[in-house]
Length: 230
Figure 1 (tube, one colour):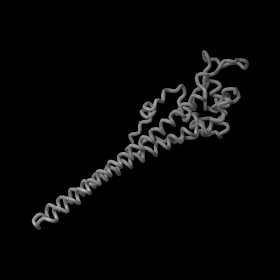
Figure 2 (cartoon, one colour):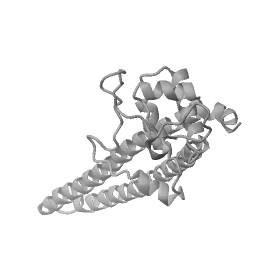
Figure 3 (cartoon, helix red, strand yellow):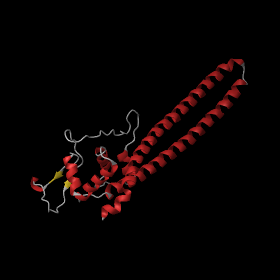
Figure 4 (cartoon, rainbow, N blue to C red):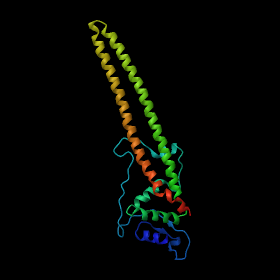
């Protein structure tokens, strides 16, 4: 692990903090503290990560912190998002080297283990799934209520128009006004449900993107948990 840490430090991808600013000697067994990757503009090429920012270019009001808090996801010693940022920072490496680097950081820093971000990711994936289910149910109920309202409007329109058409020619103006009022109300209801569908579709797409990135942690590191604990 020490050789890997030396390599990462020389490449400018990590830095180690030594007590009193003095490096450890070759026989020292004290743990090192490893910071997250820092930019290096001289020795090693770096890959520029392009994060997906929630709500960019849309009217999304999705608040991940609020969703996680509402579903009981507590603070983590090492949040999943921090590990994702670390992975992005090491994106210039191939997958095998990147995993070795992260294992070395985990082994060198006793303040966290790989279980922390993995457990955090699992809790957040569950919270996002529950949120998605809730949003889908809310949309279903809104559709039912809207359809019932539209049916009532249509039924009333037919009755009113039928009655008015039985009256004398002088009342034809009443028929025209009722048709126009009903059409406007239907158009307003349809515009509301379409706007709701579009908004929830954007939110669910964003939830899916965040959930997929969180799920990638399990596929990359889930199989290595036993090895890390040993």
